[in-house]
Length: 363
Image (cartoon, rainbow, N blue to C red; front, side, top):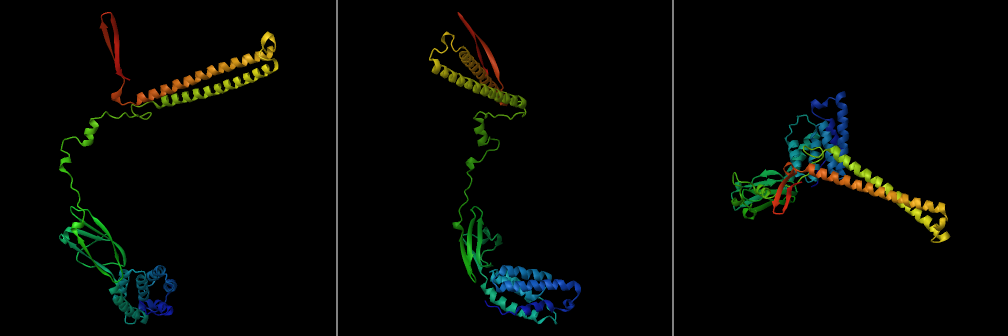
């Protein structure tokens, strides 16, 4: 709708001319009025530019500083432009119901006149929804619209737009619907309770009998308890120092074995290079008859050192394997539950011309 409204000068005049209580221009009130006047001016500019949310914010801030029916009127108009009809009507009512002094500013009186006219035009534009329940008593169905409880067979006013309706009933599953309301629409929605999905009832045959083990308990009872591993230093678990020491020994042994393995490979390469040089120079019999004694001695010692490094490397790798295996075995056994503690049983076996023992147990 097109509003009849005054210019910005008339709007601001409402901030300057007030009832006698507001008429005295004292120092403490001069600055607040100036601030409210600036905010009102800003709001009017924003409103004319179609920036209704920003305009509403400016009008609201100005009204919080200096009360004026003209500011409330502009707030109501901004709400109307934003499609917030219920909020606009509430503010129109505030303007209309305000008790003005006999010497109130003419713009304040005119604001009430405009508010009455504009609210009368607004009310028919407010949409409403009525829910009709069939198949059951209305009291048996709980209805909420946008989270607020509503009664069936009564029109409920809402702003234009989408709204969420939830219907619930004992023994039925709740149903949620999105209802779109347009300006001025009075929508009637028929809800048939037969369309509400039935809530499946629990089968009493599966209800647990008091004192009887639960299904999960029976299932667990029919299976051996799972083997769990305790963390180091847990109660009854492996000793952290021993586990970390075993891991460290394993790592050190593997590292040393790798170093000696590299040395062994290097000596083999050096020996092969020296052997190729001698064969190239004097043929396959380069070391026969005492010739090339120094070079051949070096070749022999290099091969011997390489072989020694190989044996040392194997020894450390073997030690790493033993330390790692021992650590894993200790960790596994120390992590076993108490009921799995190792035990043995020795049974002698005697017969004609034979004998022996049978060892049984858990480790």
